[in-house]
Image (cartoon, rainbow, N blue to C red; front, side, top):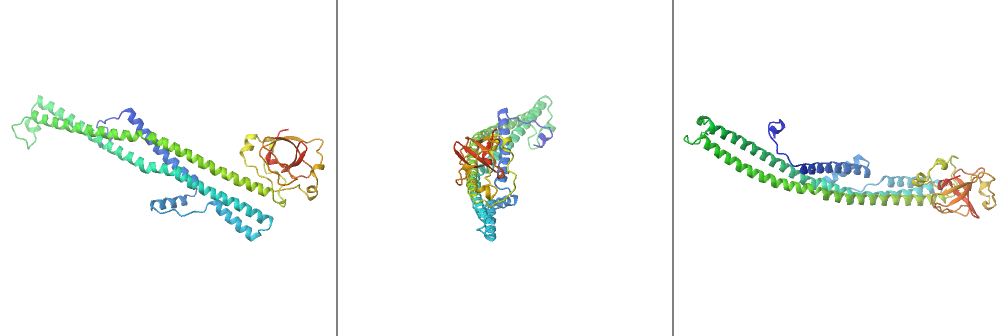
Length: 374
């Protein structure tokens, strides 16, 4: 091994296919480690918590249950509502949001548990099981190759000495001390050559056998890829389920907050950029926030009968509905995704709301559910 490092010994080279298998296995191992570590960061961003879980696993103890950030936020909101007044509009809203955050935290807990079992565990099993076996067999193959190269070098030296003894016999230099003095140097080196050839045949056999074992293990990397592909599909499925649950919980919360009495007085600027500059794809990819204002900006306007309000002579626009919307009361207009309605604004109206008309029906509609066309 030392002579190889200094370039003073010949090395038995493996065939190109075997070298490709080795490179593929090393690449699989390296990327599996990176994906595993980054997925752990995704599921648990807190490095201290990850270290704690790692120690529990190494000590073969059960990891204690940990409160998710969403559940902790829900707890704080519930306590705040209790102290500030659960019957006030702010307290009621805190309680509603607290319930939603608690459900989000539970969904996150289920996602982490499912992802750990279906994705992280198989990757970890490969690194701690199959890869350790492959590494062990590769080390044995390396030792067998070194033995084989040593036998080749020994045979080469013995043949060189035999050729030299045949041409120029020198009993004093080539004959071992424990051999009888009458033996010729040529005969002695013949025995050395025979012995070296026998050792070479044994070393070659052991090397070929170990190379075949290692080759079979390396070819099994293809099965590992198939298994990891299946696990990746499971991870995507669990992640899709998690985000779908989050979407449903927030949509329910949004609708509940939209039905609350109009007691919130906020900024007069819209919470989102102008809809005329928002593409349908961008608007559909974002979760709209329904304004909590259920009526018009002032009490006088809230008392207006919408059926008696005539649209302005100018300023009406066409709008495409981005999402289904369920009317909270008779003053609002229910919407269906992708339908076209006519909208306009009245003086003094909250900018988060417009008046929408569809046929002979009229009502308030949230602007975050619309894409203004003209």
